[in-house]
Length: 37
Image 1 (tube, rainbow, N blue to C red):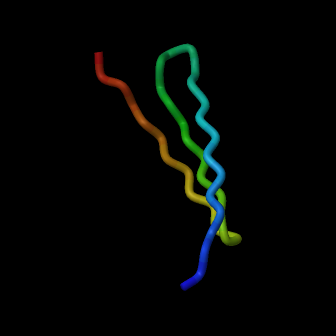
Image 2: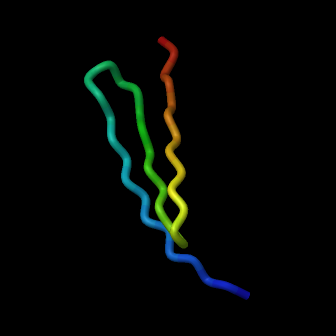
């Protein structure tokens, strides 16, 4: 079984939207969360 270290970076802009960058095992995944008011 391969173990991958995942680094999470969460950024929040002034509008309240969150952006999370997940990096691990040579792969990068970007998640954008839009907050509905």
